[in-house]
Image (tube, rainbow, N blue to C red):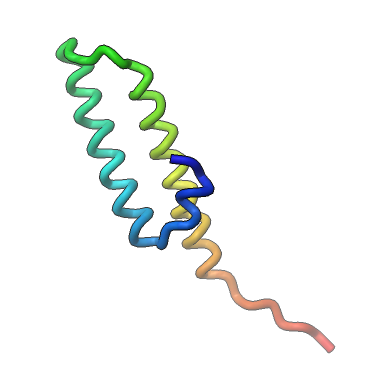
Length: 73
């Protein structure tokens, strides 16, 4: 998933996608430890997806907490 795609999702959708991606990563790690995985590059891709989703979620949370700037005149 690209960061641009993640930014287009709502906060709830990003959280759901993050949970699903973490679950996939867990299962892939378990399969790696038992020697059942052939495509080890998928681990790295999922870790990066988790980081992207966490970053977007944090950005959305920060943008919601900002106070509107008032013009001083």
